[in-house]
Image (cartoon, rainbow, N blue to C red; front, side, top):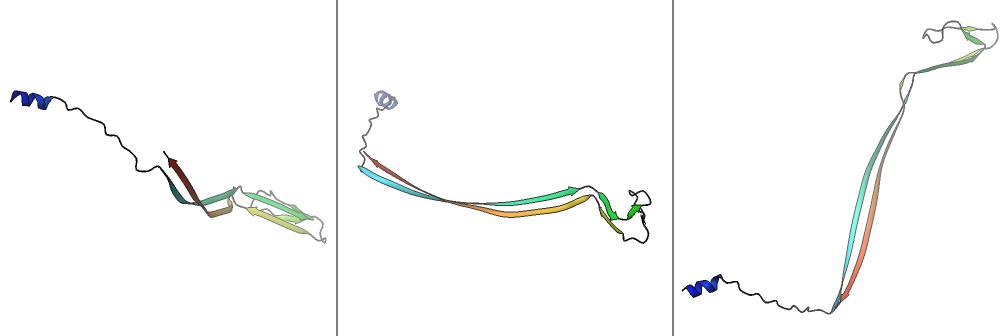
Length: 116
């Protein structure tokens, strides 16, 4: 009984098996197809300061032109005159919105040839 127990505790030896491939040559091909889409949105705002300008012919300011109630006088009475006043409040002057989709498609073909 002791001898049987001793035999069970001893490690068994392993033998390597030789593997012989069943092929001598071959090939493998693969095709990979990918597609990528990028959705891009660009929102751009141009800001401007408050401005007030004037131009004209045969006119002159009779009060401080920085005052919103400025008055104007004709320089030479009876002659033609022209006055142009441009004002703009501070804030957004221009808004630019761009939306675009960029799509990229790719196909990769590969071939592997092997022999022994």
